[in-house]
Length: 314
Ligand code: PMT
Image 1 (cartoon, helix red, strand yellow):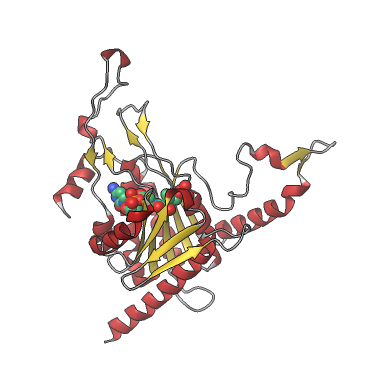
Image 2 (cartoon, rainbow, N blue to C red):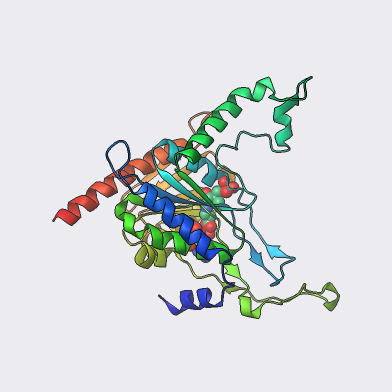
């Protein structure tokens, strides 16, 4: 591993519960790499979701954050489950969860009433959506197809991603990484971080942020070299979006880069591969852009599995 990556991991605060995370991931993968009922090995996708924080103090009071709501990752998880995948959902604590995007933003309590007998009852306008969400969520959990792993900081995110990626190596081409998390580009290295709360009385704050090593290449080449890798490219300037997506595709050797622009990300994305650019639109107000996106990515993944089989038989 490159010294840049090694020094990031060596200096990072140790992941709490790392043994527990490793055990859960291993059990989930072992259980799901058995043959599925349909007689084919099940496919496993790691969906990353939400933004990573950058702590400014070791006993963290303040941190740098970003806009990501986790909606993309949560809704994509639902469609991957529907397509028969087992999903490792690596998500930022407190962000959007699978099967919850229909809930009112202000309060879950808006969905319910109390009856005269003090029982909880869904309000009629929410009943159908609640039933569907409960049914689908419980089915995914009971069938052992959904493993949720939370992170908050950039340190936790990259350490858990490494555990998951190395554990998924044995799945070969049946594994996918769908990297929708908005990962911090700059951070304060742990060893140069203040231990205690920074005092405001000392005047203006000067702080030097170091670049976070891009883990995409190490994921692709070292951690899980045969998995199908999809990364995202987010820009606010439409004019540079595709150019940057193609650069990322080449530089990090991704199979697919999904390009999106901040303000239109819920309506349209562009799926970029080495030989095509496919624009995917939200088809109507009921279904989300993730539906046609995941349909297309599942097709591309199937083609990748076939190609890998063909390559290994030659
Ligand atoms: O969560 P939502 O509100 O629904 O929004 C969804 C989204 C816009 C966050 C999502 O669609 C998206 O674009 N996610 C990636 C955002 C991002 O970090 O883009 P980037 O261009 O800075 O990074 C490109 C890729 O490199 C990403 O796949 C990221 O996981 C990866 N990366 C980034 C920084 C870093 N230090 N290491 C990385 O591996």
